[in-house]
Every structure is written in C-alpha cells, then in structure tokens.
Amino acid sequence: MSPQQAFSLLKDCTLCPRECHADRLGEALGYCGMDSRLFAARAALHMWEEPCISGEKGSGAVFFSGCSLKCCFCQNREIAIGDRGQEISVDRLADIFLELEQQGAANLNLVTGAHYVPQILLALENAKRRGCRLLVVYNSGGYEKVETLRLMKGYVDVYLPDLKYLDRDLSRAFSHAPDYPETAMAAIMEMVEQTGSCRFGEDGYIKKGTIVRHLVLPGHTRNSIRVLEYLHRTYGEDIYISIMNQYTPVYHQESYPELNRKITKREYQKVLDAACSLGIENGFFQEGETAMESFIPGFNYEGVL
Image 1 (tube, one colour):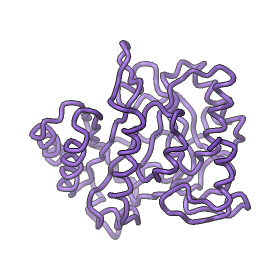
Image 2 (cartoon, helix red, strand yellow; image 1 turned 180 degrees about the vertical axis):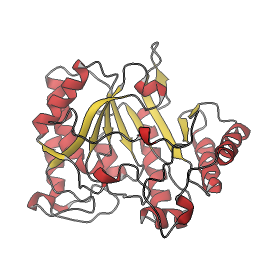
Image 3 (tube, rainbow, N blue to C red; image 1 turned 90 degrees about the vertical axis):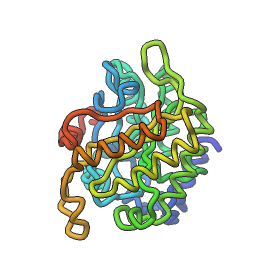
C-alpha cells in the first residue's frame, strides 16, 4: 500500500488497536483525540534517549499530539490527550525532518506517531526526495497494530517500543487496555522481524534493530520481572532492553495511590538484579535519581512553528 493509499484509511480509522472506526477525514475525532489534521508540540535535538540513539549529537525528536493509549501516569499527558500542539501540514513535517538533519541530529525520532502513520509516510517520502538521509526511529508505547507497522516497513530503521505490562489487570487499570500484553507482544515480534538483530556503527549509534523499553512502576516489580523474563526468553540477545527508573508522579492518582510516589532504589535494584540473574547482557539502565522532571521536555512548539 502506497502512502497515498494509506491516507484513505483515515476515513474509517483502524490504525491503532482501539479500532474506533472514526471518519477522521470527515473531522471526527478518533480514540487518539485527533482528526486527519497533523499536530506536533516539539521538534528538537533530544539528549535523553538511550546513548546509542542520542549520543553527543542528539536525536531529532518530533513529539506528536494525541495518543491511543492514554496511560493514567503519562509524563507527556498534556500532548497525549491532544490539548497541546500546533497544526502543521505534511509538507511542513517534511521541512522539519530536513531542518533537524541540518541541525546535526543523529536520527529522526518519531514519538507516538501511530495515529499519523499515513501523514508521516508522505512526509518521509517528501523529505527523502529532497535529500534527507537520516535513519528513522519509531518511538512507541508498544500498543500497535501489526498491520499498521507493516505500512512502515522499509521506512523505519530502529524501533523503540515500550513493553509496559504483562499483567492484564494493570494494563486495564492504568491504560484502559486489557489487551495491551498480547497486542504489544505481537507488535514487538513484527518490529524484530522487520529490523533483525541490533547493529551498530563504528560511532556507537544504532543503525538497525529494536530496543524495548520498560518503565518500572512503584509497587509493581513483579510485573517488571515478568516482562524481562519474556523478552529474554523470546529474543535473547537479538534486542536490547532498556530498564528505566524515571517514573515521575506528576499527576495525583486518587484511584491508584501506589502511583503517587517515585520507585525506591531498592525496587529498581531488585529489577536490575533479576536482569543479571536472567543473563541479560544487551541492555541499558539508568543511574542517579529515580525520578526527574527534567526527563519531561517542554512542549513549547520549539522547531514546529
């Protein structure tokens, strides 16, 4: 399916696992909170990704507005619910890709763009015709349809999904998505099939492959260890696993009081010890404070306008 043909999918939208069937071409809002118009809140060099993605150059991150997951603890909530963002055209998005390359970005980093896949494909085609040579990173919450990911085949070099839960009760409670575990597992399988094992350049930047992120949640180390066990059992050293301690209790959770605190050093160490016991060698972990609001970028339309 060509990017032009993919755009017609917005008429009866089933791009994400919610399959809301909204007529987004007719200005109806999908579950993601968006119609067919393209909104972004930031496009700038981002230094806070894994070292092989940001490095010293910075990753050219484009933060899109809207999301089909809407986790109750989302650190990017102000753009995930679609309240913050600047409308741009597909041509402007292509311009942004080229501008990030001119700024010296190590790669293009598409953050939460599943509901904009047709528009992104058109912009990538446009930018490539005009000489853009940056590798493409698809940065995702993991809640993706395999069919939509297949539209991205050949366009994406590196997949950067989350695997948040292997516990349906948690995914139902925190993300209103009881099908998250099986959906994300199928999505990651497709990602790895597309990219193969991780490969790196002499400069240390990743060139091809899949890095799976997992954010440790306070009070839920058992879920984290299940995630690590599954990933290592299924993919071994073909993928890299990024174990994150940056959970930040930005929003007060009345229904889930356990989420109103940072994770403890003991909790994070328990998960890291489990990773070592499993024999996970290809991975990343975070040092320093277990939660920092500096991990949350300012959505001030930098690089978008």
